[in-house]
Amino acid sequence: MAKEDRKEFKDTLIELKGDFLLAIKDKKRWLFGFIEIAIVAVIVLFDLLTKKYIYGYCAAEGDIIVIKNVFRFTAVQNTGASFGIFKDKTTILTIISAICAVFLLIFLFYSYPRRNKFLRTSLIMVTGGAIGNIVDRIALGHVRDFLYFELINFAVFNVADSFLTIGTILLLIYVIFFFNKEEEEFRKAKESKKEILSTNSDSSLEQDNN
Image (cartoon, rainbow, N blue to C red):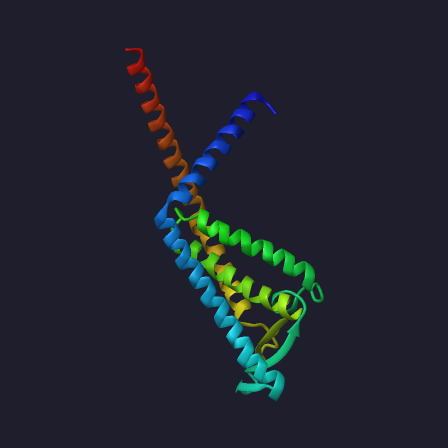
């Protein structure tokens, strides 16, 4: 690694450490963090309650026809990922999903300055959906699916899958329409901050010399 690269890497680590320390001390960030985690918890609770009562009823009594030949509730045990993909990969999916959920929770807290609604909403929905299905995999060894669009013969899914899908769509919208703009604004803000710090440092040195 070249000398300039090492210096840049060291500066980046110092900057990340500074940002992390500021984040921990930011009471407003903690408040918003707790609110967003509470919303995630509501999503998980809603998912688990629908699985308990709707899936549970269908498993015991049979299908519930909502719109004949169009949409129904039916009980299906899914040992794969959302919409039945990666069947019989419960263990590895649980591990991957758990790691992703923890990462998303940390990122929600750390990315507080990025107040874009598409980003925050997408992260909350994806996190809630992921945790809802993780609970099933850990507790039951499979995921409880019960939403079935019979008209198009679509794969049976659940509320958690719905949040995951909608959240992913919102995240794509953010990446396509907002990410580059925000990155440019963040870059300019950092450069401005560095210039101010450099100016203050030079002024301090001049005062010391005088």
